[in-house]
Image (cartoon, rainbow, N blue to C red; front, top):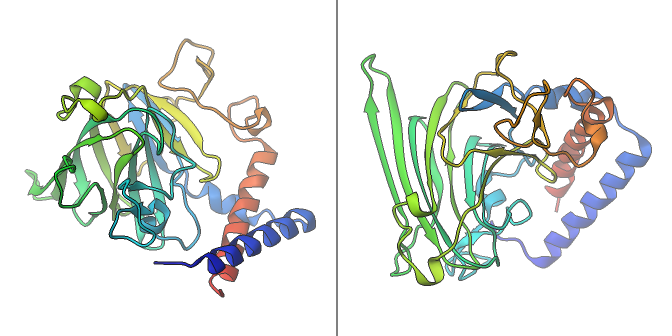
Amino acid sequence: MTENSTTIARRQFVKATIASTAILGGVSSAGAAQQDGNSQFAIEQDGNCIPIKPLSMSGLPIEEFYDYRTPDTDPMSYKYASFGTESLQRDDTSLLFLYDGPKGLSLVMIHDKLDSDGGGAVSFRITNLPVQGKFVVKDDEYDGSTNRDTFDYSKHRDWNGKETANATIHWTWQGGRSDGAVYRGLGNDFEFTIHPQFNEQALLSDEGGEYSGEVNKWEVLSGDPNNPTRTKLKMNKEVKITSSSCDSGTTTETAGNKTANGGGEGTGTKTTSNPSDVNSDGGQSFFAKLWDGISSILNSVVSFFTNLF
Protein backbone atom coordinates (compact mmCIF):
# COMPACT_ATOMS: atom_id res chain seq x y z
CA MET A 1 0.00 0.00 0.00
CA THR A 2 1.36 3.40 -0.98
CA GLU A 3 0.72 6.52 1.06
CA ASN A 4 1.58 10.07 0.10
CA SER A 5 3.19 12.53 2.51
CA THR A 6 -0.11 14.30 3.20
CA THR A 7 -1.80 11.07 4.33
CA ILE A 8 1.16 10.14 6.54
CA ALA A 9 1.21 13.61 8.08
CA ARG A 10 -2.52 13.38 8.85
CA ARG A 11 -2.05 10.01 10.53
CA GLN A 12 0.85 11.27 12.61
CA PHE A 13 -1.25 14.27 13.72
CA VAL A 14 -4.21 12.07 14.64
CA LYS A 15 -1.97 9.65 16.55
CA ALA A 16 -0.32 12.45 18.53
CA THR A 17 -3.67 14.12 19.30
CA ILE A 18 -5.34 10.91 20.47
CA ALA A 19 -2.34 9.90 22.58
CA SER A 20 -2.31 13.27 24.37
CA THR A 21 -6.06 13.16 24.97
CA ALA A 22 -6.02 9.63 26.35
CA ILE A 23 -3.12 10.24 28.72
CA LEU A 24 -4.58 13.50 30.06
CA GLY A 25 -8.19 12.28 30.26
CA GLY A 26 -7.49 8.82 31.63
CA VAL A 27 -8.53 5.41 30.31
CA SER A 28 -10.10 2.27 31.72
CA SER A 29 -7.96 -0.72 32.67
CA ALA A 30 -9.79 -3.11 30.33
CA GLY A 31 -6.93 -3.05 27.84
CA ALA A 32 -4.49 -4.47 30.36
CA ALA A 33 -6.39 -7.74 30.53
CA GLN A 34 -6.45 -7.89 26.73
CA GLN A 35 -2.64 -7.58 26.61
CA ASP A 36 -2.24 -10.32 29.22
CA GLY A 37 -4.20 -12.64 26.93
CA ASN A 38 -1.20 -12.85 24.58
CA SER A 39 1.19 -14.29 27.17
CA GLN A 40 0.70 -17.97 26.29
CA PHE A 41 3.56 -18.06 23.78
CA ALA A 42 7.07 -19.04 24.78
CA ILE A 43 10.59 -19.53 23.48
CA GLU A 44 12.72 -22.31 24.94
CA GLN A 45 16.49 -22.65 24.78
CA ASP A 46 18.99 -24.84 26.60
CA GLY A 47 16.48 -25.90 29.28
CA ASN A 48 15.13 -22.42 29.94
CA CYS A 49 11.73 -21.01 28.96
CA ILE A 50 10.94 -17.35 28.30
CA PRO A 51 7.32 -16.16 27.96
CA ILE A 52 6.84 -13.80 25.01
CA LYS A 53 4.06 -11.56 23.71
CA PRO A 54 3.67 -10.91 19.99
CA LEU A 55 4.32 -7.39 18.77
CA SER A 56 1.29 -5.80 17.15
CA MET A 57 0.18 -2.55 15.54
CA SER A 58 -3.62 -2.65 15.48
CA GLY A 59 -4.92 -3.26 11.97
CA LEU A 60 -1.46 -3.15 10.33
CA PRO A 61 -0.56 -6.24 8.23
CA ILE A 62 2.90 -7.64 8.74
CA GLU A 63 3.96 -6.76 5.18
CA GLU A 64 3.35 -3.08 5.92
CA PHE A 65 4.95 -3.31 9.35
CA TYR A 66 8.07 -4.91 7.83
CA ASP A 67 8.01 -2.49 4.85
CA TYR A 68 10.46 -4.31 2.57
CA ARG A 69 11.75 -1.90 -0.08
CA THR A 70 13.43 -2.56 -3.42
CA PRO A 71 13.76 -0.51 -6.64
CA ASP A 72 10.41 -2.06 -7.69
CA THR A 73 8.40 -1.01 -4.61
CA ASP A 74 6.75 2.29 -3.78
CA PRO A 75 8.39 3.80 -1.79
CA MET A 76 11.52 2.37 -3.43
CA SER A 77 15.06 1.77 -2.24
CA TYR A 78 18.19 0.12 -3.59
CA LYS A 79 18.97 -1.25 -0.11
CA TYR A 80 16.60 -4.25 -0.38
CA ALA A 81 15.78 -4.11 3.31
CA SER A 82 13.12 -3.60 5.99
CA PHE A 83 12.39 0.07 6.61
CA GLY A 84 9.36 -0.45 8.85
CA THR A 85 11.41 -2.15 11.59
CA GLU A 86 14.32 0.29 11.52
CA SER A 87 13.59 1.52 15.07
CA LEU A 88 13.81 -2.08 16.34
CA GLN A 89 17.01 -2.94 14.50
CA ARG A 90 20.38 -2.91 16.27
CA ASP A 91 23.89 -2.92 14.84
CA ASP A 92 25.40 -6.43 14.47
CA THR A 93 22.29 -7.96 16.08
CA SER A 94 19.85 -10.60 14.84
CA LEU A 95 16.22 -10.18 15.97
CA LEU A 96 13.44 -12.73 16.39
CA PHE A 97 9.81 -12.03 17.33
CA LEU A 98 6.18 -12.93 16.75
CA TYR A 99 3.82 -10.42 15.15
CA ASP A 100 0.04 -10.52 15.56
CA GLY A 101 -1.62 -8.93 12.53
CA PRO A 102 -5.08 -8.90 10.93
CA LYS A 103 -4.16 -11.90 8.75
CA GLY A 104 -2.74 -14.05 11.51
CA LEU A 105 0.35 -14.68 13.61
CA SER A 106 3.79 -14.38 11.98
CA LEU A 107 7.38 -15.29 12.74
CA VAL A 108 9.67 -12.34 11.97
CA MET A 109 13.46 -12.52 11.56
CA ILE A 110 15.68 -9.46 11.00
CA HIS A 111 19.47 -9.33 10.83
CA ASP A 112 21.63 -6.22 11.42
CA LYS A 113 20.65 -2.56 11.01
CA LEU A 114 20.19 -0.21 8.09
CA ASP A 115 23.15 2.14 7.52
CA SER A 116 25.42 0.19 9.88
CA ASP A 117 29.02 -0.68 9.05
CA GLY A 118 29.82 -4.10 7.65
CA GLY A 119 27.65 -6.91 6.32
CA GLY A 120 27.21 -10.43 7.62
CA ALA A 121 25.93 -13.96 7.09
CA VAL A 122 23.33 -16.12 8.87
CA SER A 123 21.82 -19.55 8.17
CA PHE A 124 18.61 -20.79 9.80
CA ARG A 125 17.21 -24.32 9.53
CA ILE A 126 13.60 -24.23 10.76
CA THR A 127 11.82 -27.51 11.40
CA ASN A 128 8.18 -28.43 12.13
CA LEU A 129 6.64 -25.20 10.82
CA PRO A 130 2.83 -25.16 10.55
CA VAL A 131 2.07 -26.31 7.02
CA GLN A 132 -0.73 -23.78 6.53
CA GLY A 133 1.78 -20.92 6.76
CA LYS A 134 3.93 -19.36 4.05
CA PHE A 135 6.75 -16.86 3.59
CA VAL A 136 5.10 -13.52 2.82
CA VAL A 137 8.42 -11.63 2.93
CA LYS A 138 11.68 -13.01 1.58
CA ASP A 139 14.42 -10.51 2.25
CA ASP A 140 15.93 -10.92 -0.31
CA GLU A 141 13.90 -12.14 -3.27
CA TYR A 142 14.84 -10.57 -6.60
CA ASP A 143 16.64 -11.44 -9.81
CA GLY A 144 20.18 -10.10 -9.89
CA SER A 145 23.80 -11.04 -9.37
CA THR A 146 23.87 -9.33 -5.97
CA ASN A 147 21.15 -11.61 -4.56
CA ARG A 148 22.92 -14.54 -2.96
CA ASP A 149 20.19 -15.46 -0.46
CA THR A 150 18.43 -18.82 -0.79
CA PHE A 151 15.08 -20.00 0.61
CA ASP A 152 14.48 -23.76 0.53
CA TYR A 153 11.00 -24.78 1.66
CA SER A 154 9.50 -28.28 1.76
CA LYS A 155 6.48 -30.10 3.23
CA HIS A 156 6.38 -33.65 4.58
CA ARG A 157 4.32 -36.01 6.77
CA ASP A 158 5.55 -37.59 9.98
CA TRP A 159 4.93 -41.16 11.14
CA ASN A 160 1.51 -40.13 12.45
CA GLY A 161 0.47 -38.63 9.14
CA LYS A 162 0.71 -35.02 10.35
CA GLU A 163 1.95 -32.67 7.63
CA THR A 164 4.54 -30.07 8.59
CA ALA A 165 7.02 -27.86 6.78
CA ASN A 166 10.76 -27.24 6.97
CA ALA A 167 12.76 -24.27 5.74
CA THR A 168 16.47 -23.68 5.26
CA ILE A 169 17.48 -20.07 4.68
CA HIS A 170 20.91 -18.69 3.92
CA TRP A 171 21.38 -14.91 4.14
CA THR A 172 24.27 -12.61 3.42
CA TRP A 173 24.12 -8.83 3.17
CA GLN A 174 26.31 -5.85 2.42
CA GLY A 175 27.30 -3.12 4.82
CA GLY A 176 24.59 -0.51 5.33
CA ARG A 177 21.79 -3.03 4.75
CA SER A 178 19.81 -5.58 6.72
CA ASP A 179 18.23 -8.94 5.88
CA GLY A 180 15.41 -11.16 7.08
CA ALA A 181 12.08 -12.88 6.41
CA VAL A 182 8.47 -13.26 7.57
CA TYR A 183 6.54 -16.55 7.85
CA ARG A 184 2.82 -15.90 8.34
CA GLY A 185 0.14 -18.42 9.32
CA LEU A 186 1.40 -20.00 12.55
CA GLY A 187 -2.12 -20.58 13.82
CA ASN A 188 -2.98 -21.32 17.46
CA ASP A 189 -1.16 -24.63 17.92
CA PHE A 190 2.50 -24.85 16.94
CA GLU A 191 5.93 -25.90 18.13
CA PHE A 192 8.80 -25.33 15.72
CA THR A 193 12.56 -25.19 16.14
CA ILE A 194 15.19 -22.83 14.73
CA HIS A 195 18.69 -24.21 14.34
CA PRO A 196 20.96 -21.13 13.93
CA GLN A 197 24.36 -20.70 12.30
CA PHE A 198 25.97 -17.28 12.55
CA ASN A 199 29.06 -15.75 10.99
CA GLU A 200 31.69 -18.31 9.93
CA GLN A 201 29.21 -21.14 10.61
CA ALA A 202 26.78 -19.75 8.02
CA LEU A 203 26.88 -21.14 4.47
CA LEU A 204 27.46 -17.76 2.78
CA SER A 205 30.09 -16.47 5.21
CA ASP A 206 32.88 -16.66 2.65
CA GLU A 207 31.50 -13.98 0.30
CA GLY A 208 34.07 -11.49 1.60
CA GLY A 209 34.51 -7.85 0.61
CA GLU A 210 31.55 -5.61 1.44
CA TYR A 211 29.68 -8.66 2.76
CA SER A 212 32.19 -9.13 5.59
CA GLY A 213 30.95 -8.49 9.11
CA GLU A 214 29.98 -10.11 12.39
CA VAL A 215 26.67 -10.69 14.14
CA ASN A 216 27.47 -10.33 17.84
CA LYS A 217 24.05 -10.75 19.45
CA TRP A 218 20.79 -12.67 19.00
CA GLU A 219 17.68 -11.27 20.68
CA VAL A 220 14.00 -12.18 20.99
CA LEU A 221 11.60 -9.23 21.29
CA SER A 222 8.34 -9.18 23.22
CA GLY A 223 5.49 -6.80 24.01
CA ASP A 224 5.29 -3.14 23.01
CA PRO A 225 6.46 -2.61 19.39
CA ASN A 226 7.65 0.89 20.30
CA ASN A 227 9.67 -0.28 23.31
CA PRO A 228 9.87 -4.08 23.39
CA THR A 229 11.50 -6.24 26.01
CA ARG A 230 14.77 -7.61 24.61
CA THR A 231 16.05 -10.98 25.80
CA LYS A 232 19.48 -12.18 24.74
CA LEU A 233 19.71 -15.69 23.28
CA LYS A 234 22.69 -18.01 22.97
CA MET A 235 23.92 -17.87 19.40
CA ASN A 236 25.15 -21.47 19.30
CA LYS A 237 22.00 -23.14 20.64
CA GLU A 238 18.72 -24.00 18.92
CA VAL A 239 15.49 -22.40 20.08
CA LYS A 240 11.97 -23.82 20.18
CA ILE A 241 9.03 -21.45 19.79
CA THR A 242 5.72 -22.78 21.03
CA SER A 243 2.09 -21.78 21.51
CA SER A 244 2.22 -23.32 25.00
CA SER A 245 3.04 -21.24 28.06
CA CYS A 246 6.08 -21.84 30.24
CA ASP A 247 5.88 -24.18 33.21
CA SER A 248 6.53 -22.23 36.40
CA GLY A 249 9.54 -24.39 37.19
CA THR A 250 11.33 -23.65 33.91
CA THR A 251 10.59 -19.96 33.41
CA THR A 252 13.69 -17.80 33.28
CA GLU A 253 13.48 -14.07 34.00
CA THR A 254 16.78 -12.21 34.15
CA ALA A 255 17.88 -8.77 35.26
CA GLY A 256 21.40 -7.86 34.27
CA ASN A 257 23.29 -11.15 34.33
CA LYS A 258 21.47 -12.50 37.39
CA THR A 259 18.48 -14.83 37.22
CA ALA A 260 15.34 -14.01 39.16
CA ASN A 261 16.02 -16.71 41.74
CA GLY A 262 19.44 -15.24 42.56
CA GLY A 263 21.52 -17.71 40.57
CA GLY A 264 24.25 -17.05 38.06
CA GLU A 265 24.00 -16.01 34.42
CA GLY A 266 20.78 -17.00 32.70
CA THR A 267 19.82 -17.64 29.10
CA GLY A 268 19.61 -13.95 28.34
CA THR A 269 19.21 -10.47 29.69
CA LYS A 270 15.76 -9.00 30.15
CA THR A 271 15.88 -5.22 29.94
CA THR A 272 13.16 -2.73 30.75
CA SER A 273 12.92 0.99 30.13
CA ASN A 274 12.10 1.71 33.77
CA PRO A 275 12.87 -0.27 36.96
CA SER A 276 9.27 0.27 38.08
CA ASP A 277 8.12 -1.93 35.19
CA VAL A 278 9.08 -4.99 37.25
CA ASN A 279 7.97 -5.72 40.81
CA SER A 280 9.93 -7.57 43.46
CA ASP A 281 8.62 -10.93 42.22
CA GLY A 282 9.91 -10.35 38.71
CA GLY A 283 6.42 -9.65 37.30
CA GLN A 284 4.95 -6.50 35.82
CA SER A 285 4.15 -3.69 38.24
CA PHE A 286 0.73 -2.03 38.44
CA PHE A 287 1.97 0.93 36.41
CA ALA A 288 3.47 -1.29 33.71
CA LYS A 289 0.19 -3.16 33.35
CA LEU A 290 -1.70 0.13 33.28
CA TRP A 291 0.58 1.39 30.52
CA ASP A 292 -0.02 -1.85 28.56
CA GLY A 293 -3.72 -1.11 28.80
CA ILE A 294 -3.22 2.47 27.64
CA SER A 295 -1.11 1.32 24.69
CA SER A 296 -3.70 -1.28 23.65
CA ILE A 297 -6.56 1.23 23.73
CA LEU A 298 -4.54 3.88 21.93
CA ASN A 299 -3.65 1.45 19.15
CA SER A 300 -7.32 0.58 18.65
CA VAL A 301 -8.46 4.22 18.66
CA VAL A 302 -5.62 5.29 16.39
CA SER A 303 -6.43 2.50 13.94
CA PHE A 304 -10.09 3.64 13.79
CA PHE A 305 -9.34 7.30 13.18
CA THR A 306 -6.42 6.80 10.82
CA ASN A 307 -8.57 4.60 8.60
CA LEU A 308 -10.78 7.64 8.06
CA PHE A 309 -7.98 9.42 6.18
